[in-house]
Amino acid sequence: MAKLTIIETGLWDVPRNEIIRAESPEIYAENRRYTIIGYCVLIQDRQLGNVLWDTGIAQDWENGWPEQFKRDYKIRRLNSLTGKLAELGMTVEDIDLLICSHLHYDHAGNVKQFKNTHAGQKVLISQAEAQEAFSRVAMSPSGVSGAYFRDEIIMQGIGYETISEDTWISDDIFLFIQRGHTPGVLGMIVRTGENGNFMFVSDAAYSKLNFGPPIVFPGLCVDEDAYRTNIIRLRLLKETYDAKIIFGHDVEDFAQWKTSPFYYE
Image (cartoon, rainbow, N blue to C red):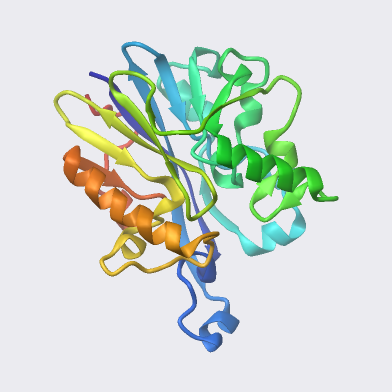
């Protein structure tokens, strides 16, 4: 069986309207704040070696973010990805496979750390996400489109490999494609021995509140019907694999999980 450690990447404030669809025009106009947490996952897999799922916010965000982003997103705490890997006795060179659930700034911000590494030659994403992200940043004169930043995902020394259907990439790691938040967010189930199965859903369900029941839609949602269908599917997957679910950005729920350097085995 695999073993995994959950690496907290940071804590920051975002517009509440992104996380919870505003209940009224008045609430939308208030532009309330909402605190979220981010993480990535390091899996030590018997077949694939060291697998990293997501990379967090760019370590050099202050130099690369547009001024509007700096106003909209207030960083409270940011952990260096390379620093957290060092705590585990690793560098980016030790990662055998890099997976991005999707290519938004808070999940793919540190892809650049993997330039010219083995893992950076073929970062794994979904085909639907590749079509969405790369076309949008290519067509944007600024290189920024929504939460996609061209300079954080397209560069010399980084290549991508895509999957277009749900697949077991090893005996203990299952990737599944989720439409709703974006056209192709990758979810992941990891099987461990003593600690059972874990399901990481990324932004397909920001929090317990979004997951429901009842389902509470986020403001950022490209397909409401697909989002609803996916939540129903997640509930079935959770039951089928008797999996513990870790939501994308839920501060309160995240507190129950032990984080790096602790491993679930």
